[in-house]
Length: 464
Image (tube, rainbow, N blue to C red):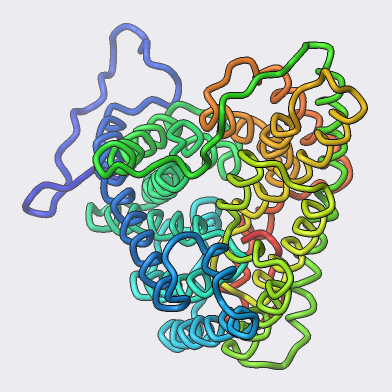
C-alpha cells in the first residue's frame, strides 16, 4: 500500500524484513501499516458525515425556494395549486439539466466514473468540480419534487471526500479505492442512520466479501460518521417505525411466500426503470429539455397523487402510523414506480435505494392486508410492510445481508429477525434466478445513468 508521507514529502522508511526467525503469526493479507487506514477512515467518517449534513441543509433550502412551503415534499405538493404541482418538477429539471450541461463542458468529454465504478474497477479518483456540479444538479431535481432518492447524491458527495482526502495523503491504487469506499460507507451511514449497514453496503455490493482488511476501515468510517451526524448534530431517524412483533411463528411460511413474491416482482421493477432509460435515450433532446420532460411527467402524475414527490420518506412513515385504503396504496404504488422511472430515465442525479424501500413497503402492506383479512389473528399489515422493505431491497440489490441489517437497525426488534431473514433470502434467490444482474450491476461496470448521458448520450442503466 502507499504509506502516508512525512512533512518532507518522502515516505517513511520501513524496517527491513527479517531473513530468519519463527514463522509469522499474522493472518494472511495483514500489513503493519493497515493501522493508518483506520485513522484515515476515522477522519473520512467525520468529513463525510459533515458533507451529508451540508447537502441535507442545502436540500431543505432548495425545497423552500421551489415550493415556499416547509416540511416534507409531499406536504408541500399538497399545498400547491394543481398547475404549480404540475410544472414545478419540470422547472427543477430544466435547472438540473443546465447544471449537468455545465458539468459536461467542464469535463471536456472525459467521463468521471461513479463512486461504485471507481471503487470496483477504477482508480479511486473523483473530480472535485464535477462532483459539486452533480450535487447541485441533484439538489435542483430533488428540491423541485423529482421522484428520486436524495441519498444517492449524499453518498456520492461523501465518497468523493474520501477520495479527496486520500489523494491529499498521497494514497493510490487499492488503498485510495478503499478510502473512497470509506467515504461512501460514511455517507450511507449518515443518510440512513445505520452505522453497521453503511459498511456492509459497500462490502457486500462492491467488494462481494467481508474481508477484515476492507471491512475494518469501512466500519470505522461508518460508525464515526453516524456518531457525527446522529449524536453531535441530533438528526432523527429517517423512518419512525413503531414497536412491532410477529404474532405467531406459524406465520413464518407466509413471510417466506411474501419474500418469494417480492423476489418475482423485483425484476419487473428493474425492467420498468430500464425501460424509462431506453425511452429517454431515443429522444434527441438536450439535457435541460430531457430532464424537464421527466419532471413534467412527475408533475402531471402528482396532480392526482402528490405522494410521488421526493424519495418517499413521509409516505412510508404515514402508512406505518395510520391506515390507508388498499385502493389508495395500490394507486400510489403504481404512480410512484412510473414517476421514479421518468425521473431516473431522464438522467437526473440521484439514487433508487430509497424509492426501492418505498415500493417494498407498499407491496408488503398490500400482502399484509390480504393476509390479515384472511387470518385475523396474524400480524398487523405494517409488520409485513417493514419486512417487505428489506425483502425488496434484497431482491433488487442482491445483497441480503445488508438488506436484513438495515431493517434490523431501523427497528431494533429482535422478534422480527426470523421472518426478516426468511423473506430477504427468499426474495434474493428468486430474483437472482429470474434476473441474475442486480440493480447496481451497470453502475459497477459502466458508470451512472446521469454520467453516461452527460458525456456520450448512450442509453443509461437503471442502477443509479
